[in-house]
Image (cartoon, rainbow, N blue to C red; front, side, top):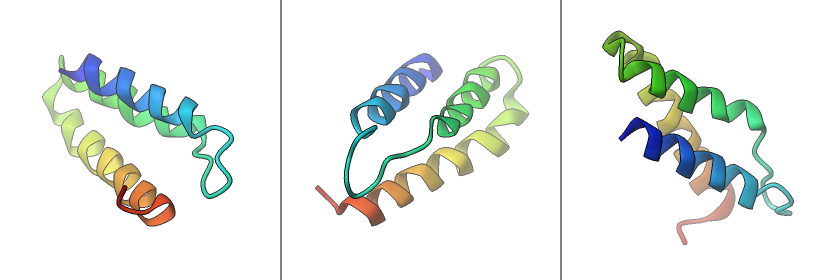
Length: 66
């Protein structure tokens, strides 16, 4: 599951790369790397879930709900 989250996040970052409303930094992919590490070391979920949630909220605020 962590791999699917990482691939989807990276695809989303690439798709929004040249968007006029919001162009997320590739640094957001660090959240997916932490999430991948959480597959082995579960306490990393304490960092990855808030990071990924923050990304989704920022995306929604910048791009709207659609």
